[in-house]
Amino acid sequence: MFTHTDPTLLSEASMLFAYPSCRGMPRWAIYTIFAAGALLILICCLCICVKCCCKGNKKKKKKKKDEKINLNGMNGKTTAALVQPDVTDVDYGTAKKERGKLLYSLDYSAAQSELTVGIKQANNLMAMDLGGTSDPYVKVYIIPDKIKTCETKVFRHTLNPVFNEQFNFPISKSTLLKSTVVMQVFDFNRFSKHNIIGELRVELSNVDWNHVIEEWKPLAEPAKFEEENLGEICFSLRYVPTAGKLTVVILEAKNLKSMDISGNSDPYVKVQLALDKRKWKKRKTSIKKNSLNPYYNESFTFDVSFDQIQRVNLVISVWDHDAMTRNDAMGKIFLGCDASGNQLRHWADMLSNPRRPIAQWHNLLSAEQVNSTLTLKKKIPLVSKMPF
Ligand SMILES: *[C@@H]1O[C@H](CO)[C@@H](O)[C@H](O)[C@H]1NC(C)=O
Ligand SMILES: *[C@@H]1O[C@H](CO)[C@@H](O)[C@H](O)[C@H]1NC(C)=O
Ligand SMILES: [Ca+2]
Ligand SMILES: [Ca+2]
Image (cartoon, rainbow, N blue to C red; front, side, top):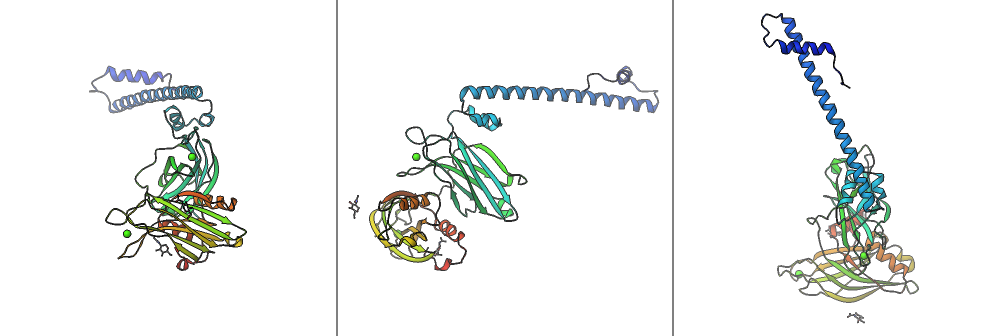
């Protein structure tokens, strides 16, 4: 370091100050003096810079230590934050009411044009249920081209779930750079709407794809703008394996979209079964005129053998009846062997509770979204034969 300066430089500098007027001096002398002066100023600047940087570092280190101690005293369980004393983690620990944080990973395979989103675990999630706990699961999708929505399993009664699930999204490199991954943590409730705990949005243009990304991020308040609410539907499912009977009771729907100028709709519900992804059986409820919260309590029983129930998809769609024009689809959902998330859960609950009706609420999705999820999983192009 520059603790002492070359004495010859110092004497030359003093010469410079001693001769403010340069008249009568040889040219080479003037040049030498100027050069020496410039060098001296440069060295001074360097010294100041180095000193400043050193001080800054020391201050930062000291601050981090203080924050660590604070965190430690505040909450003995934030070991993850201590292992990775990241600035975001530290900020998270000092704020008041938190939504929790999520550990996720991102990996892109250019060869396969496939993005893999890993949902690893969550920590200190906000409690949504009585008793100070939640039933968390994570929904993952990509915008603006919402090709599909994936969901993890539900973990009951925990604020620190370990999901360890991975989801693949087919996506080209150019689309990738214009897209955002959305990860939303929800609290599952069997008989009421699922509450969102918080979300992460990662703009993929900002990601360094030379490495696998894996990081903790504090959950943010969910963005309101793109939440397309198509309403919810409640129905019960009952399967009797010995008799080979599947019973679907369409109970009610609420918060449906208004489709008519009156501000209401005339909703009815279609119940369709597909076997091996082919149109198979179809029934529908009565039409409830001028309602966005229709009550049906209508029951439909289908003959489905135990062998067939493994290969069946049940598609439930809500339609607005129009006397003069074509009926419009208001929302859709499917359950069965190819379903995922909340829908698969309901289907699995039905299968594991033979002879017992199991009722559950579901958020309706757009027909486009359901179509694409179903067709995505297909190897044989049967789209034109599909009933939905
Ligand atoms: C629903 O229908 C079933 C059978 O049709 C009937 O027994 C039940 O009471 C109805 N429930 C309500 C709440 O109306
Ligand atoms: C969904 O698929 C069905 C059958 O392939 C088609 O008739 C319908 O128009 C599609 N809906 C949308 C919104 O793409
Ligand atoms: Ca819950
Ligand atoms: Ca109508």
